[in-house]
Length: 175
Figure (tube, rainbow, N blue to C red):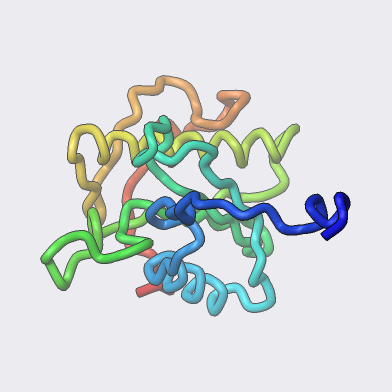
């Protein structure tokens, strides 16, 4: 063996293989089910706009939702959250309920904003805030419930709208 052959060999290591963090690079059947339902509702949008969380809640991050996808509904944007239901694996013994038993959706009308991207990010922030209430206080949002935000001005970034709260309504096209 020549002196250079020593450097050509692959470095051997006795380190154990790295374990993956739960949910990372693994199957996510709940996430897939949500995506499939919305992909069917909005054909041809298999890769919608998506905002993910940099540091996940279960790893010490501030945002409880792992992600929010936004589908183009023509004259509106349709938001769907990922994280209030069991998106990675079944974690409870209750067969009929997944996680908190809900995900949020939100429809934002297009075309009335100076900065539509800021409005979209603002809605994502509101959805994260609502999810944070569920994660920290156990508050569940039921169908036809009024969600008081405490705001006296509109929820849009310019605070021009008359919308200061929400009424929860089941998404009729998704089951």
